[in-house]
Image (tube, rainbow, N blue to C red; front, side, top):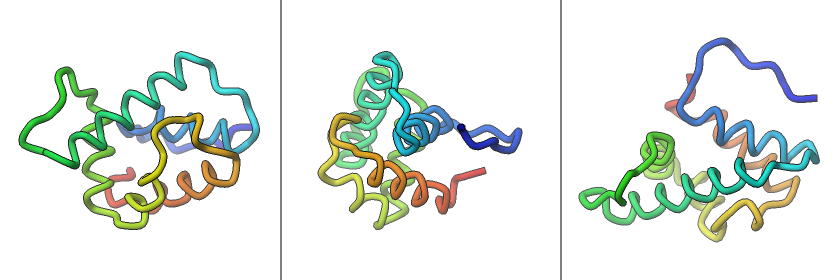
Length: 106
């Protein structure tokens, strides 16, 4: 069962939902997996060169890039992850827990 969240929303709620689904052993739909991969890729590119954002950077990628630049533990946890296929249940749980500690989390 997915955990209930407060009514406050965050641009990263879809990313958190994806991690929560994976951490609980649910199958993540292909469209959600593709979105996660796109946001992660854009966020990583943005952290490498903030002055040159990728075309059509999703707002989630901007927020994730900010978190990556602000939180070393999250940056290290995501360093070798290039997409959802690189995550297992345990790693998704750790990432979700780390994101919950985020300074931009509502």
